[in-house]
Image 1: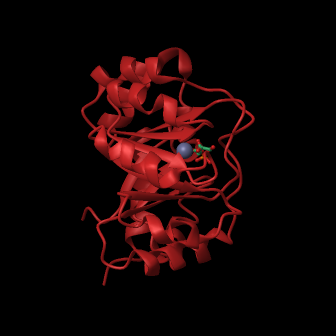
Image 2: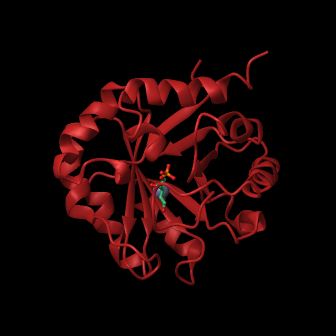
Length: 222
Ligand code: DX5
Ligand code: ZN
């Protein structure tokens, strides 16, 4: 029990009812609430800003896992921290001074996450391992929900698991996660699974979350 965390991405929720949707995935058993922030520059889509994170904060006591797909990012960290984010994840490909950016997130009292695009090698985290609480492997090119999982990212997960060793760093995967590939993803070392369409198109959010968790945990038992 509790080996795998499920982080539904509200990118696939009904944006006109975000508070309600957030409460629904909380009650359906979500561990983290994954919030995808896009700027139309780092990625070709625009979603939500710190005002929406702040508005959602009273709707759940679960971890708000905020994935920033924005560049520049430094000037927005304080706003996302004040909005009530628990985890703030930035991209290795955004900005020039990642070491400093990660330190700023921690100095704001938040957990620091580092995301890698599909083309970025696992070694990008090598000299940042003491600065991060979470590493996010993008298993699609960021920008949109509903894309197909890129199988080459399984190898990246295995390499990152080895690089992490016994440090208290969570390994997260994001993009195209379904009950069909959740087992392989967990076997490769991921312990936090982000899923948008697999959960929100399932009709029954509790069943969608449980199906992902079961498919991932089955490979870890025994
Ligand atoms: C993509 C986002 C993901 C996305 C996942 O840029 O970071 O969180 O919403 O959606 P699915 O699970 O539909 O691939
Ligand atoms: Zn995401």
